[in-house]
Length: 409
Image 1 (cartoon, one colour):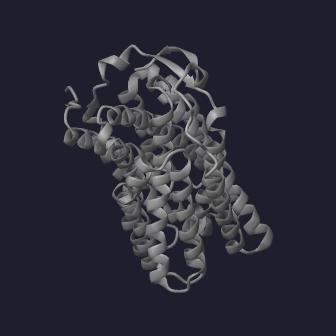
Image 2: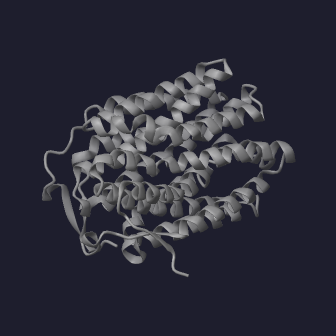
């Protein structure tokens, strides 16, 4: 049966197409990556892991993400944008299913690695498809790019509603059932994603890909890496920290769900900043918001304040990711978008390799999880200041790109 096609004519159809594309990061990032944090306390207790071992599991996932981001452009040339999105998402579904089948640390590492690779390939392919749609609707470009990044928020929200309640109902040691349920949920989402096929504009089909030069955007790349280290440490261990300070399953579920809801609301809250602020200023502002939200969440004693900080953190977290994609779209020619988005995704993956194991090691060494969380939060402040120094590139000239063999899909 031929997949349903969404024609890219009219803003509303563009919005519909981007909303469908957002299922890819919902699967690969919101669930396959971040839902691990919800299952981590039960897995750590049942399997006897240290904090360093728990963090290493997410570092392996980030390593897969780094690999996936590095090969995403090549995969798109090989199987097309739509194929890269579907195959990458399917790899995440299978990895979640594998995670439900074993408590073996090595096998779980393999599953986390596969989820990272598939999630990154689907994420980059969906991001490139989105910026090409946005280019055809310049007046709504910032909103359309931001809309794609509601996907992780949707995945976070759904997993936050389902997983904590499931663990409470079934009791300790039920983490594998949580993985099973998430595998079924993502399989349904992947099937829905497969029903839509993006029609790449004819002008881009035969366009030679070029590599976006790293040096002109080096400041924002370093800032984004520090941002990634800080945010993944927060996302990995925040639920464990809440449990440690006495938050029950309901409070944990509300916190995580509000974090996801913030991500869903992100385009409506922050797309104006992405559109209006030049250079790295939008990234700086939004990164500063993640710092403030994380600092408040760690220092507040009131649950309502922690909940508000979760919403704020989620909205700004995904807005920063959208802002980096917008920076590539605004500063590089279309032929360099796959490479540019890939650079940002690789940067994010590199930071996420470092963050969990670093925070876990600090926690084990100091016996203080809060200290590791505070150190990660401090990196967000440094990243925000650094991004302020990034300027827009002077011109979209050949000195900002390098030819790459092959054709874009």
